Length: 98
Figure 1 (tube, one colour):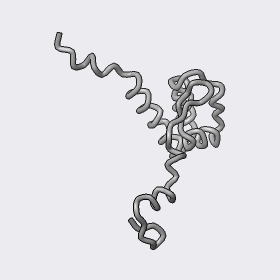
Figure 2 (cartoon, helix red, strand yellow; figure 1 turned 90 degrees about the horizontal axis):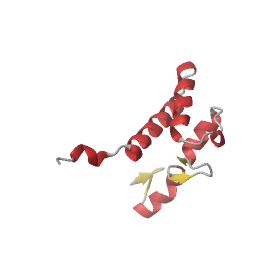
Figure 3 (tube, rainbow, N blue to C red; figure 1 turned 60 degrees about the vertical axis):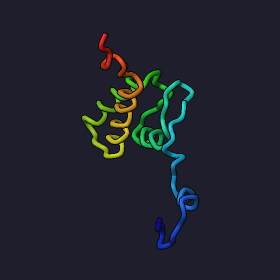
């Protein structure tokens, strides 16, 4: 892999990545968000301490986007919706044949 015109192996490339900002972490109010998501939400005036569940946060983000569109906030919104889908949908019921 080449970064900044320098050939790097995988270990060196990891040092240049900011994957820590993308890792999901439990917040003190029970929400699971990455540092990137927290940063984008804070920049747009969202105080996550006011939210007890991710659905409430997503609802307010979508309302905000209806009035003031922001690319990064829209991306975070889609991440939140995807998180809700994959963590709250009971997928095994779809495959029950009995």
